[in-house]
Length: 224
Image 1 (cartoon, one colour):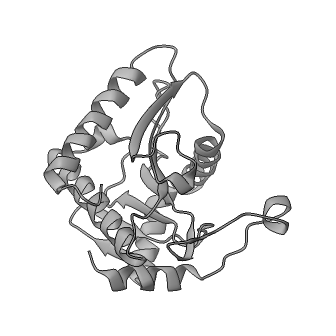
Image 2: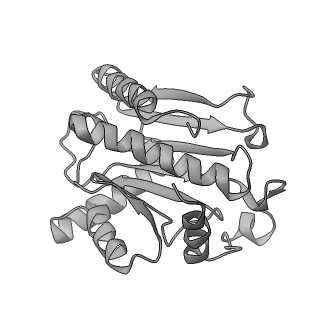
Image 3: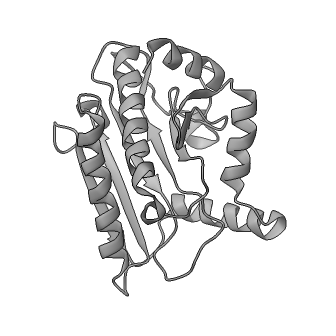
């Protein structure tokens, strides 16, 4: 993605929207997971960056956790949890990587991986099929800019797994959802040092090697 132009990535976004809509329309499909893998260090079966889409009857564990948390917040406040969170982050600015007209990229305060990041639309919407034409281009631009930051951080083809978390395709409106993209890169201090989850991190709770604020500062220094 870092080597592609915004119009080229826009074609990928269009394919995501089309596949989410077509697969989600099947009555036995309740969740569509779109993701990209990049880098041999990620254990990829294919050596080149590649995207995949899995569609299934059940909601996977990670989106399901977000489903429950967002629904609980919506019932209490009547607003999407992630939308209110973005308002707070944009006011503080310390973990924001960049913004364009439609999207925000940031290092979330709960990040587990050293340079974990998230891209989210400024306008609350449950799914990528809700994107306007300009928002599709805005998403392509944001993806390109973040990928460029990653590659520039350690001057390497930065490995990561990235994916879209969005509303299930179970026929319900899901006003609680605010779709977003998550990026989980494994590098720590250089192009050759990988972050491992071992010992306490595997058995109890992940520990951060650098703060989210420091990670955001380092990525911003690359430019976009």
